[in-house]
Length: 194
Image (tube, rainbow, N blue to C red; front, top):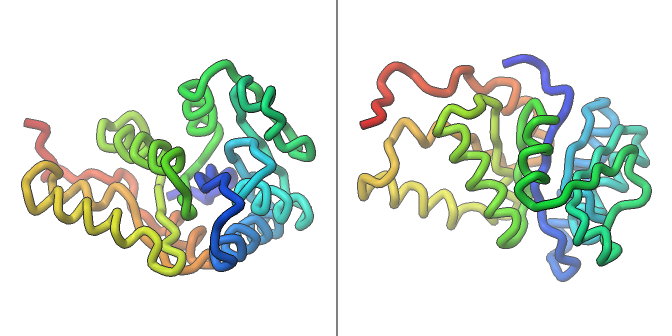
């Protein structure tokens, strides 16, 4: 896998989260800023999004937010981002973020984060991209999701080979090494589409 120069991070916008999640967002933002890896994020100034973006900016990083017009009108856009791209719809937002990124990391989040995660993993399954994806399993947050996917594999709804569509790391410090170590292409010849 080529070096990650631009990373899309999906994460929550809630302010009502445990400090361990805020610390992870802060650490990832700082790490990206110091490594000069451009952060692509949902453009919000609130919750983990805001914490991460602020940390990346304070560390000298480039931060690009992509936000739909209706969220700008609600005044949740991050005015301090290096660039804030306004789009019309949530669908455009997700496509633009994906286009700008070399890879994807998923911090803890809510329904919106799940939506983004499932879509980017599904796009990879459908071979619409082959960029690396990693879940950052802060304090075991993503274990229920990993368990659900394992259950789907056991019941035959997901092919075992599709478990390689994403990786899982426990620490923020492991995100970039894991992404850069992921094999490309993700699919081997054993995957059948029937």
